[in-house]
Length: 195
Image (tube, rainbow, N blue to C red; front, side):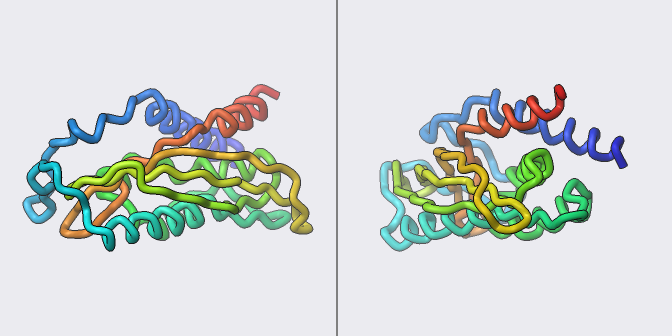
């Protein structure tokens, strides 16, 4: 079991480092073709997304961050399992583009919760539209990631801020990229690994 934790942790950490090291492309330069003929990006123009689409992206950002960071840790339960990571992937699947789903590291919140022996949840999530075009949107967000012990008592809070890039895929707005300050996560993982 220790070997499985090591493997999951290593893969998760490598994914986070790779995602963190890749600079997010400027929205104006997003012109890559979609993986299938049914999912096409619209022609780049200076038109904005509709107010309804922008509102949908803001609401989706809030729901996604709540779901991404929701980790219930109960005493004696193994958090770092393939089943839990796959279950989280299914929960997040409706939010993400196919490409993002394939490269997204679902295990990082589990790894952090396991290292801190805590449950996680996001509070005080705020999102605002940073930029909007007819084929992509950029949402800025802030939140507090709250750590609680087995009794539900708050033990730590980490403020996070980031940006979510939305693209249209198969006629629906989906999250293509989510970049945030994960230094605190890496510090937890690295500190605990080196002990």
